[in-house]
Image 1: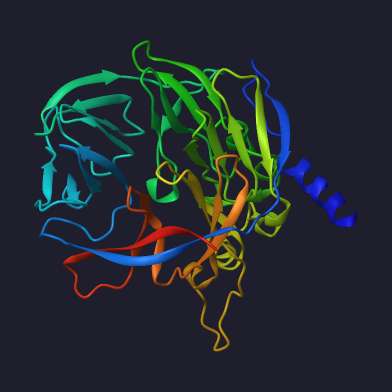
Image 2: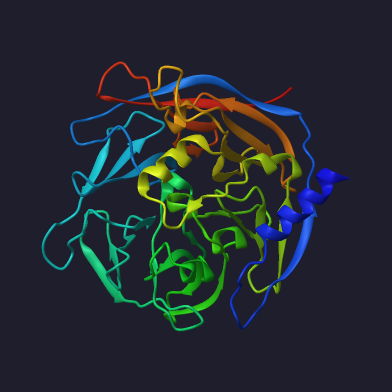
Length: 388
């Protein structure tokens, strides 16, 4: 009874979200229990030989198809280019070098790049109110001046962090864009805005918004990079929003007036309380290393499963006084079915595999592998789903 009461208190504290003022969402709670049926197996490693222009790691990337074959498209900030790395077939790595001057110039500090087709590559830089469309040669095809505003008229800046799992979602008629207001991230006002806007690029207007911060973010504590939520398009056409500090999953349906809060009592140990808003960066770094938090939530359409990455708590320092890193902790990949019920887990060795660079394909779940024989390689571990 005591644990149930604590769980209800935690649930009430985590919710209390500020939604868009003209359409208050109605909360529907759905609790989930853990079932231990499935796991992952590291089946093999994929070694990719790089050329002199390619990078071994990308902080922004997209899996695309070219001539029905899979490529990893990585944003190369060093060369100001897109690198097209083949994941199958016998192809050379291709590069799209952007112009650095003139009307088609691209800034290396790009926030969103999306490959629609060879003649439609959209680039968005958060502080430049303009969306550019380029072709496969890097030629500027079109440029649109766009200012994205929320329901209160506040300008919102599109930004995405693929290594954190914060992807935009591009639908046929609207774009779901992660955005942020021009407010101090330590101010309480920052966390009273919705995190995602539904943007109509033809009409140049925001037609909906969702993804309010839970109350745990609106209190006196601060989370730095652990503030950024994850957006995942679900198998049912809804959108799943997760936060590093919150064990739950928020499910939104476009146009609906309710949100389902998926509640996981077994994951309450991952609840993160942050640090004080006046604490310094070193205090946050210590907290980031030692505390528990969630990373990205990924949907795998090939196996009808979700992967949710999580870091466990750990001590700040080793026995000899040296600090640990976040990747020294125990990491988990939780497996969820299409109903978002947990059906298993996998203990990930984050010293060997970097969860910040991962994606799914028909072969399985690829996670960046830190060990490689030389600097001219990119290596991924391939993980496949198995029943226990």
